[in-house]
Image (cartoon, rainbow, N blue to C red; front, side):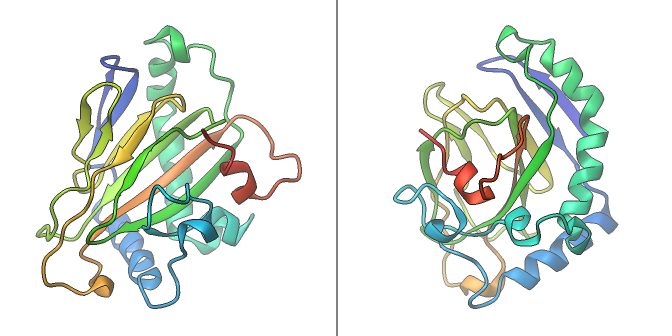
Length: 216
């Protein structure tokens, strides 16, 4: 995995070649399992910002609870966060706005799938320590669009296959509309994202959906 720590236009981390080939095979097994009729949930069902997106998703943490061993994605995510620890410590020292982020205690993870005509309008996620967005698609790429954009900064992240970006929770972001011609929704040729909300506090009895829905 190759990573870069950037402070312009806001503090963030970009990484490429995040997962090894055998790890990607496990991730795609899970993507293929969930990309079937009746499995992907609507924004209202998974805790998305209703009215800002129509993309389907699976709230993995909410569905599996403490049984993270049932998901290859969640198991690999745990390893990824450990691998990123030195980088995250360096990142916190790179900018005053994230210097005092408390030690994270929990992860809340969603698998998202964007198909033709789907995107996500600008929004802010809170009250998390930081957010990790990991991106995947089948090669060769069959769609256009899908970039992660930051309207306040006139900045975009291309969301290349097997890449990630880590951002602070205060940064407004959105997803540009995905476009695919003459293809089936369940082909899996759209844009996949694993969104990891890294939390520094306990939920105090709230469900993952209720906790993640506290947004502006």
